[in-house]
Figure 1 (cartoon, one colour):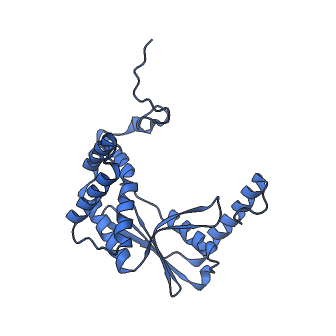
Figure 2: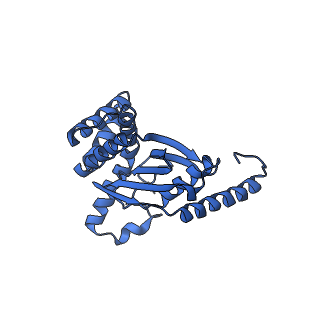
Figure 3: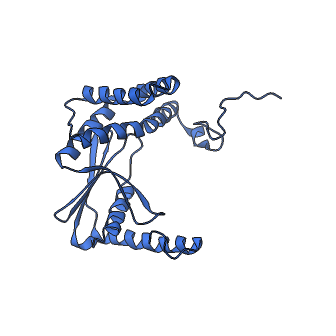
Length: 224
């Protein structure tokens, strides 16, 4: 029996594979939406890179068209020596709806206006760390903004964890400060003000789990 080879990369899984059978019950519209969202996620890294560059230069895009051109220019410069990858990335852009560019524009403008830092590493240990899209700590207010390029509604848990890790990293008592977190997605802004008790609970959770992992690895000093 001969099997057709669909991909030479053993790590390249089909987007609608037997191991992820949730697509069986999808409608035609849901299948198309899932396919388009897959490429929005692939583009996410490049979009974040371009946005971070604009933020670091304190550039505020004046229009959605400027954002679109900037992202395309960034992708071209990044992949111009790999024509196949460049063509693939530009084809991915076809699935990026216009509201995504508007979301990026608003995110950049708000971050620059608030004089926030872009793409900042935060964490408590080797086991618990990440990168915040935009952050600022000033006058006892911790602000964390997150840009989402996918269409699946994002949850605030990730930003709560960022708050906890930031407090742990900088030895901040969460009851002595206040918090503002935002998610920018689908041309909308979603905001919350986490309670200090919720952040402290997450801090305790991280410290406890870090000790468990350190003990499992047999280390006594491993980034705490």
